[in-house]
Amino acid sequence: MPLNRCKWAGEDPLMVAYHDSEWGVPVHDDRLLFEFLILEGAQAGLSWQTILNKREGYRQVFADFDPVRIAEFTPDTEEALRKNPAIIRNRLKISSAVSNAQAFLKIQEAFGSFDRYLWSFFDALPIQNSWQNWREIPAQTPESELLSKDLKKRGFRFVGPTICYAFMQAVGMVNDHTTDCFRYTELT
Image (cartoon, rainbow, N blue to C red):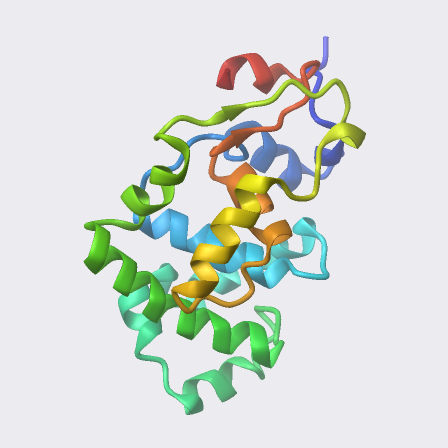
């Protein structure tokens, strides 16, 4: 008997694997949180499947999402990245990854970790929703608006409320698996 999944996972093996093992699992590792933040920003206007297909390329050219190394990227490095087909070659998205790395490091310094900063918005506990179907899931919430506003105040870009909500879903700050999905109960 096949497992019942959230409809967005579809049948693509990469999307199914992402849904089954990563999406909605609470993340507390700063490097992985940074990776998701950059990838969600890169997704703006595109499909998540496009980003997943380029994830390994991002890992290669963005120093495995090491914020210290990315924060040191020069304009020449950014120009070279704009010519690399392994990633989304949007100039603003590339430059925002660099400035976001710099802002990320400042948060780590101020709070001890990005994880501590991020989860302080939610009392360290994921929000548990109980959507019956994917059409009920909002694109943004008051919580994502609050996070977006604070990140922007701290110098982040490509972190609007919709991107922040997708990020929150990805890193398990919110459980938005539909109630008929096998992962819903596992993550509740």
